[in-house]
Image (cartoon, rainbow, N blue to C red; front, side, top):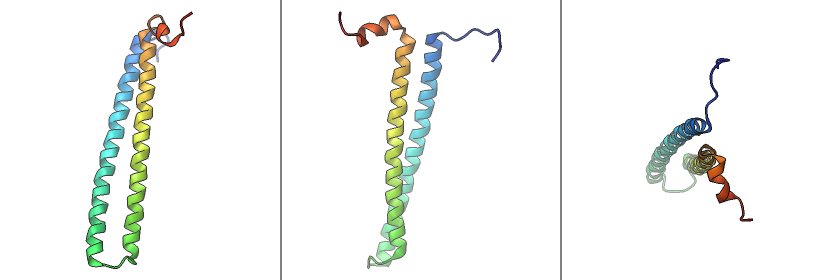
Length: 110
């Protein structure tokens, strides 16, 4: 950062923050889609393995099932992270509008 550069205005800062939030949400969406693909692949492997070994005492089947549980829990965590990032973006939008416009919505009437 240069010593003589202007500080960004609140609107400019909000705009860059919003851009970063959207970028983060797209990255999280990409990871969620990848987890969905992995879940489908593991499910196909489980079905294929279940046809080969009809009894449930197969250790590979148990490993695949635990892998499926881990993928699903990871997907839920990513969905929560995406919602959290979206919430942070909503907070940033309020700051860019200026306090004079945002104050009546947040302040109780006198």
